[in-house]
Amino acid sequence: MQTRHKTYYRDNSIQISKTLYKKTESDIPMHSHNFLTISLLLNGSIVEKTSDSQIHHANLGHVSIKPPKVLHSDDFVEDSLFLSIKIYDWEYYQLDFTQWNWVAEHKTLLPHFLTLIKERNKKEAVKELKSAIQYCLEQKIQSVQTPNWVLDIAAYISENYEETILITEIAKRVGKHPFHVGLFFKRYYGVDIKTYQQYLRIQYSLATAVEQNKSLTEIAYQNGFSDQSHFCRTFKKITQFTPKKALHLIDV
Image 1 (cartoon, rainbow, N blue to C red):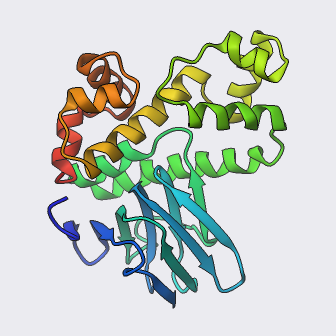
Image 2: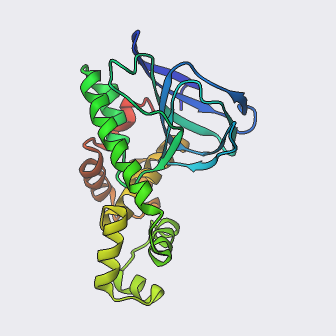
Image 3: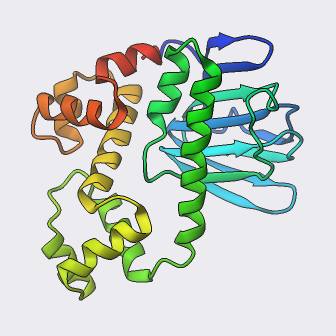
């Protein structure tokens, strides 16, 4: 990472930037903003608390939505890099988020952040991001009703994302038929098990690129891809950007 803060774009209605917060020394006590903030945690870990005692432990891939005037504090458990969108004129962008929220995305929101950096038409890009966030929030509501054995599958994939995972092996672990494992997982997470694992690999690959000075081949092998070509194809399939283009856009 070349800078602790970089602004990609700013006008009177919106600012798009990245910020690196150092572990412990960047901790921020209770405060609020006079703008709407939507932030993607590219790497690291943070504990955020609100004045009404809500707490969220966020890791890479999590996205925060903070409306104006929401009191909150931030404790950085690790060095944490955010891509952030500050909306000063939320009426112009037709953003009606009124509740503090975090989403642990199942369908990656990274492409929408990259598009916002790249495209001139910010209003259309924000509109697409809003739709994607609303989908994630709907999935979050549904997850309250997710059976424990489906949650266990998601946790297992998260812990072993870089390994080869067979649905037959997962089925044995949870004592269910492979057909029902696939059916229920997609019902509650919106994607099949293979795609969910690919999302995780892409998130961790980007975090590796941000944290470490490694080649794309090294990043690919470290995060479970068979080779650099496999990594690049999967990355573009999921994000619509090549790894090199994405890293160039966020200046890594």
